[in-house]
Image (cartoon, rainbow over all chains, first blue to last red; front, side, top):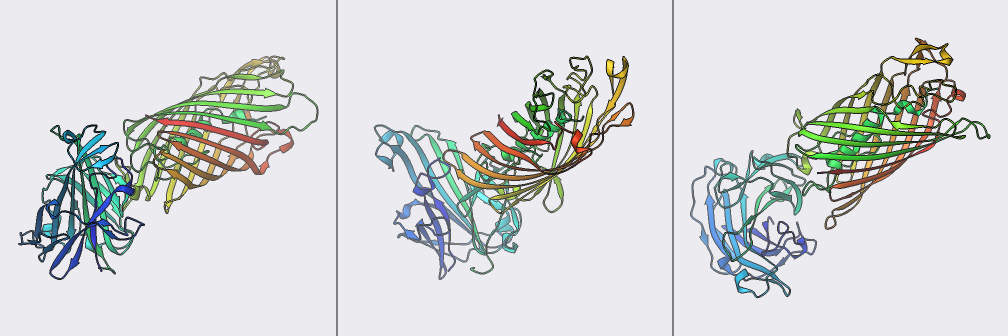
Length: 238
Length: 335
């Protein structure tokens, strides 16, 4: 079974300086005619084994389904948890947000900073994932969402041990100093051009993630934390 | 007698370079605790990040074998101090300046010498192989750091030390002086490779050339000036570094390292004539440890001569290769 996921921060994650142990994953699992959006622990990142956690379907903010040439395709988005996305997508991009999170002495609360009495820290959380099933201009070109990872070459042609050049873009613009991870482990930071090189180390699902932190514009939170993922499958295990 | 004073200046400047490795100095972002290790007594294939300032301090304590049981004028121990400053001009070009201070003590303490030695300048050019040779880029991921990395470096010492230190009879002892009197020149090259997540291999080759210096007149030379030229030095080093422990939350890392350091010393010359009791071949074994904490690095090692082939060995007391041991401690930080 192929599955692909992105780390679901639940507001808290590596980029926020918190322990990875408290972070969760968001991933897409293929099924007939589409995918299921799952949330919890994925064994590629977590040693605790697969564990799914229920989530509110309204965390899904947008879905983009493209054919290989970059043409938009319709995608049917379910309204139950876990969310089902139906469509023959060469490229599938899903943006989610679990909203505002505030760290308090009683733990992290899914509330705005302005809604808590003694906030220790707060952030607005976004998570996204881009899956490439077939290479083409649709996968090679930026989609210009809030945050994405764009490969500079066909990742599906890679062999175990090859390096892949990626760019991390926010609304189509390069993001510098974004931490980029492979299978949940930080491997580097982007340069001023948003680029970083990552080596693939196994067949099957490839999970590459990038995180950014930026100041929040309003009083609701201190920061905006966004984690995005690029997934694709190589060789055996596809 | 060519003693360890020959190493003053540039040799220790070169030894200083490994710790300058920017991959060897913790605190450079997410990759800092997972990058390649750095050796202790040789140069690594690393350059400083662009715009970063590197500070360095090192102590090398050499305990000399003595040939006689009496407390006489044999060399007892020497301490070589080194302060260094580096700057990353670009990601592939680093410049360094080093200022050594030497303290050389005899058994009887009659003719001990100490003082600032010859300052050293060094330029290091870094490049790598990744689908072809290229200069080290500004940003490298851990996966980039696993590629072969190389440097070529060149150094020169400035005659800031005193080459004319005299014993109680007024004779100049070239070996116990704190300067060469003339600039020396170094060319070297390194290669480094990470093997998996824990191992790093390092290779380093360098040659040091001395120029002939005209020394002041002294009684031993009939009240006339004389010339002296130390023999060239060839160093071939290799190191294996093992990342033994990391604590990302504390930004702490501990490496174990082992080095083999080969040194060939040419014969010294005085007034153009080769001198006895100088030159030879030495192989050192240097086990050590290196700890990283945030932007600092602390390294310690013991350098042991495990094989020597010295010319007229019985005349080389106090020379390189005749140590009981050397204790090496370095501290470095990157800002």
